[in-house]
Image 1: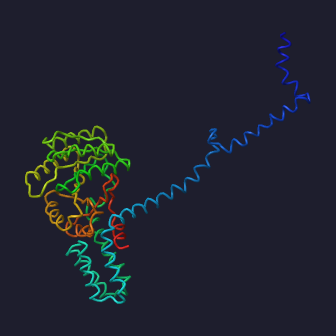
Image 2: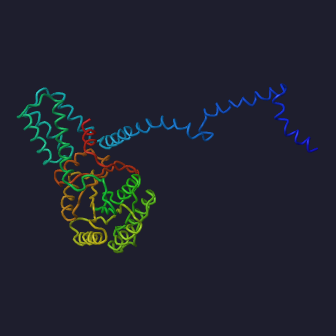
Image 3: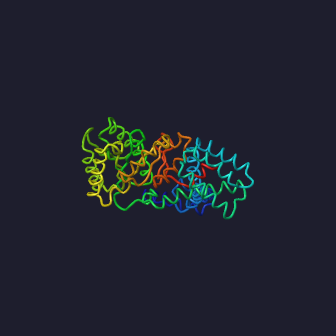
Length: 377
């Protein structure tokens, strides 16, 4: 029996010599089945052979960057649609009728600039620069006049941006950055705080919100909703509590957790309310004691639809609150987007963010080139 058992085990070897089992051998070489397998390497974990797969994705990723840039420009262009519809059409009518630029041509730009809320000071500055250019070297026609107008408007925005420490929202300082949001009620300050938290989170930064608006009813609850939407934590106190105490807790928690950006939503106030302005000074002192250099940015939230009225209010506010930059909300809801240039000239401050809608992602880092190109497309 042992021999037979061994024989049965030896049979696979013996048949190799027998022609009858040679047909069995061909199925074995039919192991060319491994050849089809490499055609589907990802299914059978042939990692080395699947390396070519990423190659086609590389160009796709590189194409995403220009797509993102186009998307940014399109969103800015859409935001200034109402302004562009009146401003660009008026400029186009002047350009179309201009073959030789003279004083009357330049003077015809004045009502167009003023109607878009660019402001008297900015309008006078732009027109004077255009006149000087016309006298020195001449302006050949309407097309060149339009190009020079774009250059002048961009120069105003860029010159203010380079002078301000809040000129660019990035790069952020090393360690904890404290951003205080200030302004009057109704400008969208709390909403903007939540949107900025979502924006910074999407950029890979850790964010904490501080509900220091303990004065307005439901302000804390509103910020809690935005914290939940943007996926960040919030430090709060009860309504009517001490906002400086809330800020103290928020700074302490941020340092303990290794948070990169702390956004502080403060109570809406007027520059004439001395008690509220003193409270803002107290909060600034609290932040500075706990975090060197804080607050690193103090952003004044302005409603673009208020135009020159809001600008007058903001001018007095910036002196008292030591504002470093402007967040301009509801830019998509006004035909007077020229207020951006009035802010630059009158306040000497850059617009660093623009609110362009109601959704969480509807806030854009302000870009002067995209704005002017969108305005004078």
